[in-house]
Amino acid sequence: MPIFLEGLPKEKVQLLYILKAAKAELTEQQFYQCAFECTGMNWFSFHDVVGELEKNGDIVCERRPFGACAYLTEQGKMTLGMFERGLTYSLRESIDAYMQRTAPQFRHERELVSSDEPLPGGGMLVRLKVLEGERVLLEIDMTVASLEESLTIRKNWAQHSTRLFDTIYDTLTGKEI
Image (cartoon, rainbow, N blue to C red; front, side, top):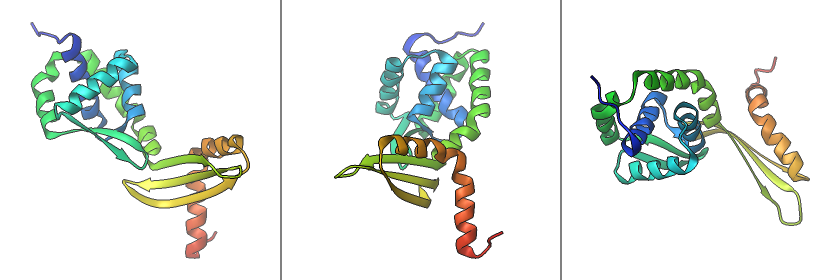
């Protein structure tokens, strides 16, 4: 009969398993979203457990152009290997299915970044980026009159970035249609 983990050890192994299932680094928001949707873990527990895992050297949280992100260390992989079977099969399957379903969206979120900042004298500077790993492929800085305009532009960036990137690239390389 298998022995299933409970309490803090279970929460630690759940988060390690999420990072394994992701097969890529996750932003803090993506990591928490999966933890909440697959395990019901609340925000405070999530941050406590992430802190413990990071302190123990099982995960690394690093700043990236698209925000803080987490990934498994070799030690974390070994730890998970020892305790992974302490999670129910159904939970592991649920996390695997969730990651498979959200992987394209999560990758897209890591590749498209937007930010804004107020300008002295009024208006907002909106910064839009297309990333490939840590390399910036395209960066557009725009000055707009209001926070509302900035938020609209940032919201629409994900939907229209591919078309804008292709148009700019094709135009500047002479491949216009």
